[in-house]
Length: 326
Image 1 (cartoon, rainbow, N blue to C red):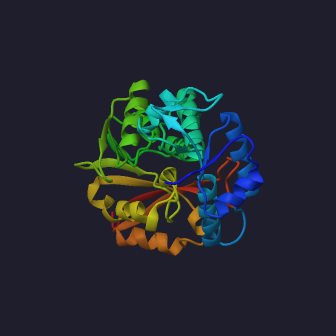
Image 2 (spheres, rainbow, N blue to C red):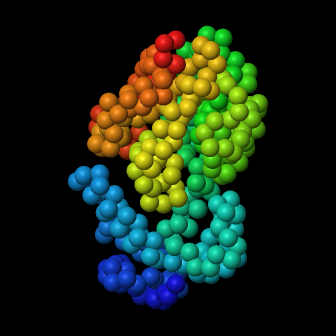
Image 3 (cartoon, rainbow, N blue to C red):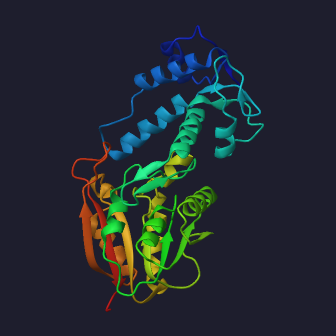
């Protein structure tokens, strides 16, 4: 990739003009000054807040392109700039190749933030403990979905449970604390599998964690799934925890969960209605997916999210689903 070399003399306005002309910038000045330039670029190209979802995504993709066009030199997990922090542990945790060469500063700051969050963890009230997310794994910074799983009455006699798309292992840990004797957690992201195993071991939870797409072998009394909530194409690798392209995971789960339930078992689907608010999926389409999978709604518990990024009117639901006719 050809770079245009720039340094501390560069202004944010000029950097933005160069990037919009198609240049990729390689910063050779002070690391902290590079952070300030990136922050200034972010203010000049703010995250979209209005317009249709499609328009917002188009503008967000352009914003990501602009902010990812400022690179810093790196050799062996060391950024070769003045006042650069020691990034070796953070890079190893995130799987940054040792010979990566120049990297986008925006991506590198994400690696640093993920390392800091992993080290301190996230306190989850429903667990009364901390969860330590890995880079590329959805962090439970909004916890109302965990509250739903912690408070929902368990199916009578439930002794086995699957946690599908476990991520950090949070929901598996909550189910273990509630007395489920046999737990299997799955994820198709190897980072999530490693993260869940580490968290569950730290929390002294006995659970099997498998890398697989959706279901493990066998059946369970309770199957829990908290899929990505927005059926749209992810723009970055980190988006995959939030965006489920074409609703693939949701459809796969609802289409086959019935045959994975023990007699009298339940599936719990935890899902925000954000996709409905954005006009990406209607409630009728969701109900049609239930019916197509041979499922009926046995109950629904709702909670309003409390975090600062929640949309006005947004609701998170726990859908209790059972095989139709049971």
